[in-house]
View 1: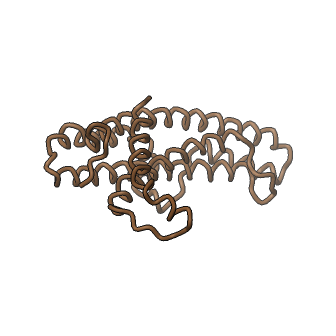
View 2: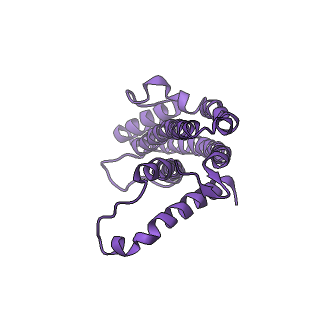
View 3: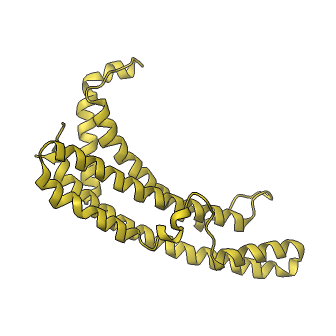
Length: 220
C-alpha cells in the first residue's frame, strides 16, 4: 500500500466509525448532527478536494488523447486549448489546496502541543510543494486567473486550423499541427502527473505521521 492509499484508508475508516451509529437516520433521510462536524470538514473534505483535483489532472490527459466533440461549434484546436488551460488551472488549484491543507493540520497540532511532530514532518512539506510545482504552475505565472495560457504550439495549431477553414489545401498542415500539439502536451501532462503523484506520496506520508496515533485519527 502506498502512502496515498494508506492516508485514504485512514480517512475512510475514521469517517466510517463516525457514521456507523447514524446509518439508520442517514438511510431514512433524517438530519444527523454528527459529532465534530467542523473537524470532519477540515480533515476529510479537504483531503477529498485534493484527490478530486488530482483526478482532474489525470482526466485532462485522457481528454487530450481522444478526439474533440463532433460539432462544428467546437474546433479541435479550441478543444485542445480548453483542455490545456483547464489542466494548468487545476494544477494551480492543487498547489493551493496542498498548502492550505498542510497549514490547517499544522495549526491544529501546534495547538495540541505536538509542535515537535509539526516541525519534523509538516514544515519541510511547504518547500517541497514549492519546488515540485515550479515550472508547472509558474508557466501560468501570477495572472493565472486573469489570462488564458498560450504557447507557440497552441498558436500554430490555431493559425493552421483557421487557415484551413478558408483554404482546404491547408487541412493536411492543420492536421499535422494538431497532432504535434497533442503529442507534445500529452507527454508533458504525463510527466507532470507522474511528478505530482510522487509529491502526493511524500506529502501524505508526512501528514500521516502527524494526524494519527496507532492508526487512529487524533481528534482535538
